[in-house]
Length: 370
Image 1 (cartoon, rainbow, N blue to C red):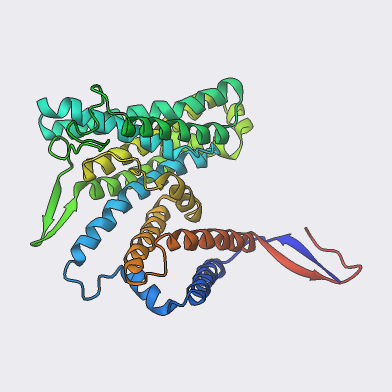
Image 2: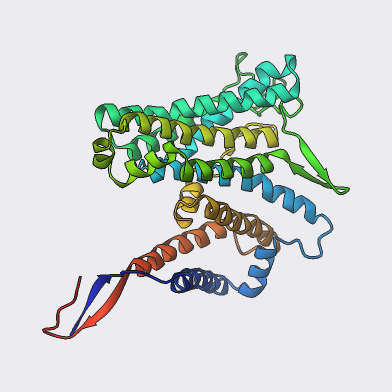
C-alpha cells in the first residue's frame, strides 16, 4: 500500500475556499502559539490587530487615513507586478523601481515646485516618476531579450543599485544636494509638502480622503479592462502561456515584453509618486518594503486584479494593526505581522497544491490514472 499524487480534474469553488480558509486559520493558529509562548493573550492581541485599535478611539479617523496611505502604494505596486508576472517575466525589482520613482518625483517637486502651480507640479511628479521607473525596469527587459539574461537576478541586483543611490543622497551634505536641509548639522531630508502635495477631499469634519485612493481604484479598473478586453492584454496572456505559440501566431514577442515591463515598472513609479506626494518628504525607508510585500500580495491573489485589492487591504490591516497592537503589548514587536504574512503565504501555497492535486491511497498492484 502506498500514496500517489494525482492531478485533480476540477476542484469545486466551495472546496477551494475551504482550503484557503483553512490555510489562513492555520497561520493564525501558529501566530497564536507564538504569542502564548511569550506570554501574550492571542485573542486580545488579534482583537487589537484586526480592529487596528479603532474601537473606542476618538482619533480613529487618523488610523484610517494612515491605513489608506499604506494601502495605496501596496495595491498599485502589486497590480503593477502582476502585469509582468502574467507574462512570466519575474520582476523582483519593485523596490528599486519604487525608489527611483520616489527620487525622481521628489526632484521634480524641489526643482519645479517653486515656479509652477501645485496641481501642475503634482502631475509632472507622476509623469517623470513613471518615465524614470519605467526606463529603470527596461534595463532588465532589454538585457533579457538581447542577451537572454535572467530577469529575476537582474531586477534583484538593480534593487540594491537604487537603494545605495538613495543612501548616497541621504548621507551626502553637499551644495548640490537639494534633497537635504541646508541648516541641519546632520543629513536630514527636506520636506517639499508645500511644493508638491496631492489634494484631499474632506469628508465630515475631520476625515480627509486623499485623491490618490480614488486614482488607485480607477487605475485598478483600467488594468482589469486592459488585461481582459484589450489586444495588448491578450498578447500578455499568450506570451505568458507559451512564447513559442506567440511567435507562431505572428506576435512581436520582444516588443510585447519591453512594453509590458515598462508599463509594470512605470506603474510602480506612479505608486512611488503617490507615496512621496502624500507624505511630502523623501526618506531611506520610503518604500516600506512594498516591492517585496507586493510580490506576496500578487501571488496570494493569483494575479487577479480585483483580488489584489482585497488581499492588499487585508495585508495592510495586518501591518497597521500589528503596529497598534505592539503599542499595547510591549512583548510583541511590530514585525510580528511579517511573520504572520510569511506563514499565510506558505500555507496558501500548500492549499494551492491541494487545489490542483490530491493524494490517493493505492493498494499494492493497483494502478492509478495519473
